[in-house]
Image 1 (cartoon, one colour):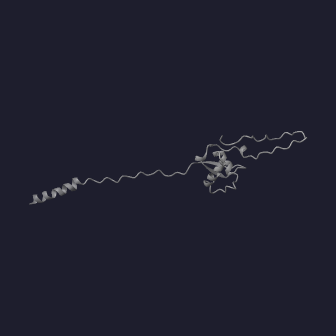
Image 2 (cartoon, rainbow, N blue to C red; image 1 turned 45 degrees about the vertical axis):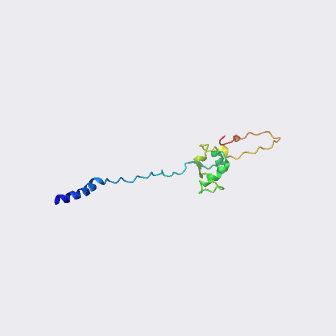
Image 3 (cartoon, rainbow, N blue to C red; image 1 turned 90 degrees about the horizontal axis):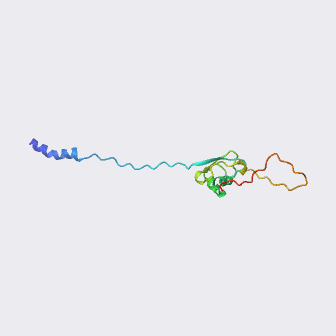
Length: 134
């Protein structure tokens, strides 16, 4: 009788021991890479610069000043100060070096010719070269 009970429980023991394979852990979902902020070129504002001149220098288009302003909400686009740091999105740039000082220097107006002999100036005139990408 004991043998009969043991044999009747044998299939149950076999199922418990051998029939139930451990369940594999659920497949891990791929984790998307963390979003990184867009890289920037940092520009230090020089005398005479506006967001339009900075946009022209780095991207070739003055009209990109709006997009640069979107990335610099802490700055007042109409009141840039010398020394302010402007973040220019790297995807806008075609030029990655700083804007030369001659590009924003005020151009001297030529004086009308006079009868007086010409006097030599101490400083050479600013170059008339156009700045920015060509």
